[in-house]
Image (cartoon, rainbow, N blue to C red; front, top):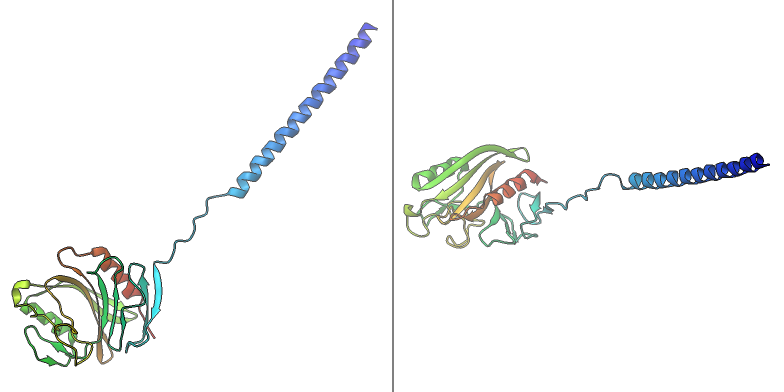
Length: 232
């Protein structure tokens, strides 16, 4: 009888251990399944796409219709979208501006008499070095397939009196005031300038910053804009 009772007790204990082991095993599988599910749903962290660097602007009045990606550092729409002139101002700096110009006339250094834009504008611009203009970092490039010459332009303040370089780049219309309505390479600015012959005309595009503290990052922004230009 004692052996039978002992066998029954052992049998009960064995079944109890089996049940406990089974429960623990099920719990382990459940936990593992839960962990596996969490890992599979989280996956690698997703990186949200960065906001675009700028927005595309299509000119409304400019005589060479074009689209261009305007960097977010510039105020857009542009301050002026005229027949021969297009310009954006920087949002954070009064010194920084981007300008597009199809000159109708130019003033040679020190002159108060305007003349028609030279047929070979690049040669004319290079000739300004005889009057105190410095052209550096000159590279050949293209703007929407059109050959272009890109350079950094500065002027020597000792080359002449105030206004000596007024209008040397050109004017947006022949009636523009030389000192206020025309554009030149001035002693207090540094310009990253592109000369782009298009048909029988010349498109000038440049970024200007303070000569005392030229903004190289702004020049890089301008060059990205040039690469985005598409003529329509």
